[in-house]
Length: 275
Length: 270
Image (cartoon, rainbow over all chains, first blue to last red):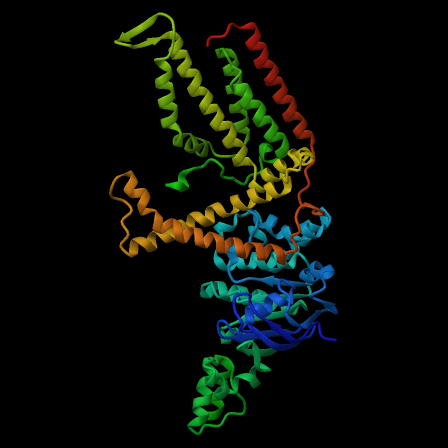
């Protein structure tokens, strides 16, 4: 059975009639890396909040590891298993010292002090922030703060982490750091749902889901999804630059075996096509 | 300018004062503050001053920082001591109209300034050597008995932690908004006090809006991390009274009795 399985999920905010989520069906397997793409306001952030029981769907059900998110008795168990990393790193840190902030989650869970210490050290090492453990948050860069926020979630030992546009407020270096961390987590077997509007981040995923107006427009492997250039363009969504170039070249009569997703692949294929 | 205020700033370190139990430190601070106001002659004042100096030298924080924290209040010290010089009683040494300086006035001035300096030094020492989290943690534990009166001790401590955490963030944001408003032609430097205060409105409104937004985000982040209030919560750093803390307490008791004895056996000067 899938780790997360949602079906017929509908949700609308109180002050509007429009369904932000309009009958979403979604399955995420254990250990999978899924990227959720879409415009601003397409409901992707709302979707993220439904996954760890911050909001309940008005219709439909979401199961996380077999637990119904609308069952209040398991709310905290679900939140422990599905961590949520938000956009603004500043607003996620609670304590004035890095290690104490990372300890916040396990402290809430009532974990034993020695065990918390171990978890905090491990989490900080995983995100490569161990040397900064006694620093104050405001002394760190955006990327570092975001990594600390990730460590704070990791210390609760979740099975899945949902990232809600984690790089939107970061500079290119910070983005690079956070993406590297996400890859490390993926290698550790943690299920990842990455919500983003950067195409070059989405191509890292095993599966890309594109949302539009509260429902799923298309999904599949990155290659498969991004080769539907026409469909994406029609909904004024971007495709990775490399893919777009290849698409235009194909239009001009060049032949490619498959769609390139990043610069390296594109160069390789161009060399192949030109020789 | 706001950044120059050193009071309330934590300096990481590894000295004996850093390692002392924050609860002990808070109680000793309260004891010392009371003591500073209980010194009525030069000997007892000197004993306290010596004790404070010893603590500061042991604290593994550069003396520069202590001077910096004194710099902020130098005006207050000057004003109060000048006022006190003229408030003395007894035979005047120097007189000009109704202004007269007496020996007791000078003593008073010295006492007041030394007291203020010691107060600032000893409380700076607490904040320099104790992380804000330790501080609120200790306060939470010390105030625990108040739960009997249905005071939400944990919630108060949590609010303090968050407030302390967001002070630098909001300062940074104020700077940014001020620059943004200046870039739009806002004039914040010229004019009198009232005009200047009025000029702050376009800074304060965005600051408040953003603070509320941050609060909303933070509440969500805390929920994501399974925050359910104080019940069933554990702490990574549990507090234990160690041997060194016992020494601290003994040291404080010695100073305390010293000062009380001095007060009893030496005639008060003020």
